[in-house]
Image (cartoon, rainbow, N blue to C red; front, top):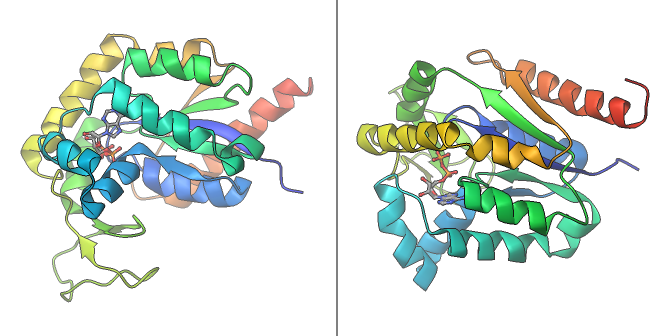
Length: 228
Ligand code: ADP
């Protein structure tokens, strides 16, 4: 049987977290839990949460900790996540979220925190060209010659430009993230976890990045088995 895994993927917006998470979740047969996708689903469904979150997301701000923690707590309690594990994407984003996550995972600790390391200039360019499937979240890159409406190859739904992928909202999200890094969010997320690894990524080579991330997970497993 393929062993599961409990992983957190960190990294700047546009670092390729979504793409890598899909690959990792297929590899380990675990759910990809993306807080951004959960919020976008709530916006589409027009729930109270979605209505409240939309404005914050469009401006590139952060939805409140209590709400986000409630969402993640509930999702991690599902059978699939408890049984096999998960890839967590977009959480934690604040020191408080990181501290609560430590408590939530006390019995089943995170195996590895992977930090995708991509320069700011590169992610700015990537994000302006990013297009996303409204329903399944598959990412695409716009080159300017797309036939409209753009239909997703995976699920036949519409491929859209995210409302928060404007230059202003992107800059705001990157600045917020830089502030949190300086404020210790990422170290806090990694402190009680057994491992925290930075994976250097190269532009436009998702397979190469995927191989690196899998190597990092394999190396952790070897260390844990006393073989590394
Ligand atoms: P990106 O990484 O491109 O900013 P995400 O899809 O992870 O996009 O998140 C989109 C938006 O959802 C964020 O800008 C923020 O407004 C909100 N969001 C997602 N996760 C969190 C979180 N853990 N805490 C607060 N807000 C969040």
